[in-house]
Image (cartoon, rainbow, N blue to C red; front, side, top):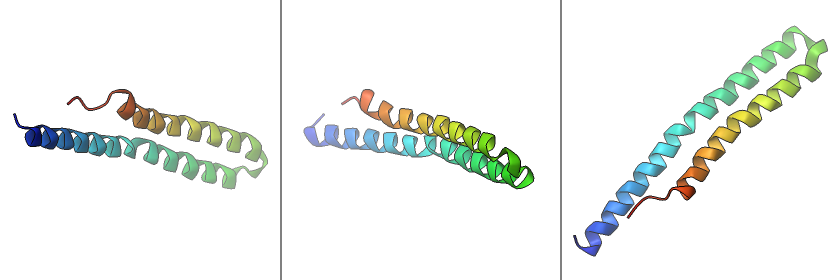
Length: 82
């Protein structure tokens, strides 16, 4: 295999990795939308529980974003084999 073919194969695999991360980021994105949508609804229904609702919203947001960041870091921990 020539050097050009090896480079092309590496670029294609790298592109698949980027597409894979992009698809994996959809899950946390949907999760964050659900968390804040339901949190807003809960605040509208029970404004007196705003502190507890907001605290749980932030905790859920942090856990969802941690999944997205772990997915991003895995691309650097396990690089595309050449």
